[in-house]
Amino acid sequence: MIGNRIKDIWDAGNPVLHGWLSIGNSFSAEVMAEQGFDAISIDFQHGALDYSDVLPMLQAMRASGVVLGARVPWLEPGIIMKMLDAGALQIICPMINTAEQAAEFVSYLRYPPLGQRSFGPTRAQIAQGANIAAEANDRVIGWAMVETREALDNLEAIAATPGLDGIYVGPSDLTFSLHDGKYPPAFDREEPEMIEVLQKIAETCHAAGIRAALHCGTADYAARAVDWGYDMTTVGGDFRFMANAAAASVALWRERTGT
Image (tube, rainbow, N blue to C red; front, side):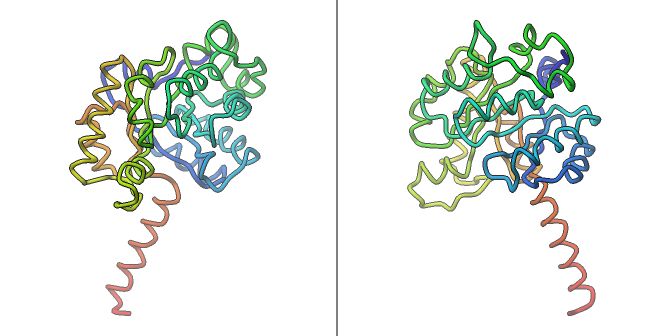
């Protein structure tokens, strides 16, 4: 079975640069995969796509060598296992609020005796190679998303879950939940109390011997998060990159032509 370069990057003492895909299109996925990211995940929770889009996207990105993953819609065994069988090497699961939910999530990622993943790596055996049954437990990375007040209250217990590789912070929902709608949902939080929370999460993860990841909207903020101790930072995504570049070009043209 192929290795997981994310773990190699961490072993070398470096952070992982992570990209995000929300558009259900194999060509745009292929373009993103060629831009130098270490890992890319398909957003199967909020993305404009379905499983019939996910499979060709994974196929289109295979040649790039980037580590491929997915954010699943929810804590549900069928879709988690289906994403693994499609060839994902990392899974991000939203709204993990308790240690019990974290343990349930881990069980869906691992083959027995460490979990209850069903064996049937349909595409994975082609894309990842043989011996998956013996090696996948060590290669697949599982991220529990912390994005609510309840999850933050249970942070230490979630981080201590056996077999969990890391905590992935969803800053929009977390800010919304902690401050009862006082701040609008957004990435790249600048409120001092939110920066303190983000730093605390990274520290708690490392104290428990696991990794920390943060979803960011810009490369500058993602680099700051690395300074706070984050091991993987998401630097924007396909549709935001497209919208931002288009808006910048339109604005420049309007300025230069005075129209």
